[in-house]
Each structure stands twice: as C-alpha cells, then as structure tokens.
Image 1 (tube, rainbow, N blue to C red):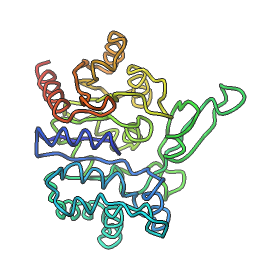
Image 2: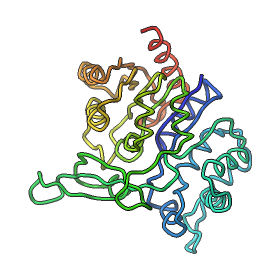
Image 3: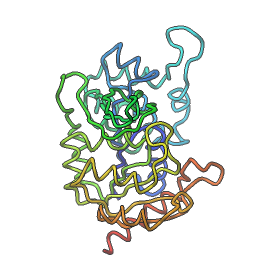
Image 4: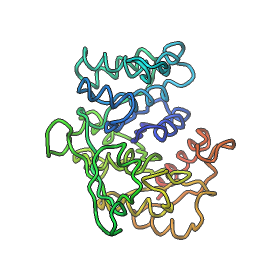
Length: 316
C-alpha cells in the first residue's frame, strides 16, 4: 500500500509511526513554515528550509532501528553559546541543503544515512509564511487583525478565522509545490491529513495550489485523523466537528473518505457524523489514544484504524 501522510511536528510523527507498522511504502509531505526555535534561526540566518519538522519526520520513519545516527540526529545542544538549542539533525540537514542544493536530494541523502525505507519531502521547495485573520485581539471582539508567522499564529490568544500561505522569498506570491510531493499524492493508495496543529501543520498543505489540486484529484482513499485534545492557542475550544468545518471552509472542493477520531474525544458523535458527511466521509470512532497519555495516539491502534478505514472505503 502506497501511503502519503501530510502534516508536521508531533502530529505527523504519530501518523508516520502508525503507517510504518502497516506498509514500507510511506512518503511524508512536511510543512516548511516553521519560524521559531532552532529551525527559525537557521531559516533566518541561512535562508534555508526550516529543518526541524523534516528531521522529526525522518526520525519517525527510521524508528527505533536508526542506531547511533538516530540518537545523534535527535540530540539537542545545551549551554548558552551559539549552538544552544540547536538539534544536531537540524544542523546536518542545513549542511546538506546548502551543499546538495536540491532539497529532495538532500533529504534522500539524510534518509540513507538513517536507514529510512520511506521518503520525506517538503510540501514546497521554498520556505513559506503563514498569514492569519484573527479576531479577539482588539477592544471590539469582531475586529479582524492580520498576523504573520507560524509561531505567532500558533500562540495567538485570539481566534483564528482563516489562514493564507505566502512564499517567504517571492513577496506577495503563492508558494510552489514540491513536484515529487504532488506526484506522490497522485500515485498514492491512501493519503492521511492530520493530526496536528490544525492551522499551522495541517491546513497549510491545502494552501499550496498544486498540492491542493493533487489532493482533490487523487484516486487515493483520503483519511483525516483528528486530534485527541484541543491544541492550546490556535484551536482552543474547538469541537471535533469544528475542525472539519474549518477544513471545508479552506478547501471546499476536497472530498474525504474517512474521518478517524478517538471514541472518548467525541462528546456528540452525531454532530461529527454530520460534519464528516458534508465532506463525503464516514467516521470511525476507535480507541486510538495511548493508554498512558490521552494526548498521544497509539501507533498500533491508529494503524489498525487506518487499515479498516481504507478497507471500508474500497467497499463503498
């Protein structure tokens, strides 16, 4: 089964870990909007793709068999000097991006180093900026403010209404899609969107025009995986069905085959069922949360749920 997972950060790590248990043909398509921490520093100083989410995706696909290189990639420098806070893997990826040039080739080399069977691709070959319309930041709660940057959007005390994606290097223009990512989505048997920070890790993929069109046109089974708990900041107070409503607002042409949610995180299943139906999807309410952490997916349970969702979609 050819599987493609789109996202970033810890949410994508969860999906990739689950997929690794059911197929060896996995492609991660990773957001490249991060402007904070080690990734943000490298992006600003070197003009490169932010490497942090790419590193996490590589380590997720490498799994526990990555050996010493996996340990080194995940190591973060302490102290107070110039290297403080940088993950070694971020620096290695930055070096590969500078010396190899092509980000797809650079990531393939990093994957070879870690013994990764699948592929990690950026959603765009250029860094991107997220711009959001936010209410609740002014004296009049209905006043709309425009804020820019992934960290600003993820941590805003206001309510995010809508996002846009812009090229960070070509002012005012929409970002281009990674051609290999578009091809992977079109050739996939199953495509997963989510879980993760909804406005800064999940929806950005739908804001890249060619990638959006590929997600609309693909013959793959399209599965949305919902978060287990609301994300602090950008989606605080969102119900499960509100996540789907926002998805439909940003990508009205997108049809979905299945929505996976943890049975204990959905207080009103009928509302989620109606929101999913508007996208063309069935819902799967399974026990997919880890037994020891209500905010973390259990990889085996999530993988089994995805397998059942694909089987059901193929029977429709």
